[in-house]
Amino acid sequence: MAEIKDPENTVIIELKDGPVVIELLSDVAPKHTERMKELARRGAYDNVAFHRVIEGFMAQTGDVQNANMEKDYQPSRAGTGGSDLPDLPAEFSKLPHDRGTLGAARSSNPNSANSQFFINFNDNHFLNGQYTVYGRVIEGMEHVDKIARGEPPASPDRMISVKVASDV
Image (cartoon, rainbow, N blue to C red; front, side, top):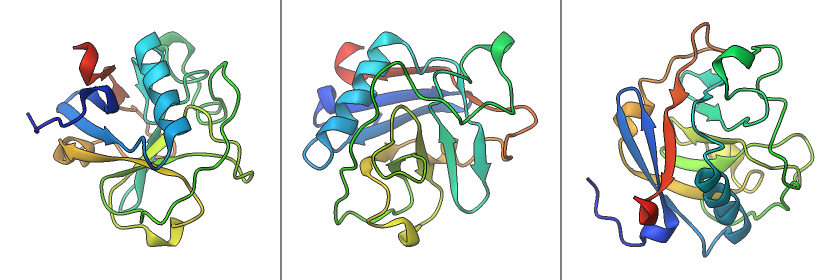
């Protein structure tokens, strides 16, 4: 396991192929970091599908409203929801959208991020300054690379569990 410097600001996403350890950047995007930890501690991200996965670009997940329960999964609705919490204001920074960074998904409104996020497969610098970067994969990127592709994937991969490292 990667060296975890700050367990309170680290999340572990369990995927079918193994764990993905993400260092949250609380100094850069404190509201987004707190939101991810709050939803993880509620178990809201457990079993949520990766509903938009584009080869060479990114894997998007976190629609806790529409994509978490197998029986309720509707590909046409996945990606349209958030959580029961209010949307977050943008926390743009100078951090680039490099391979392995976590970005806040949102609508065309920059202040509409809620629960959804994406992990960049490649350096996607065209997103810089337009989407909040609030974490980076420090271990397990090879598992992210194996997530089923599609918009939505025919048989989507899911986050088995998402836990804050200090809680495990």
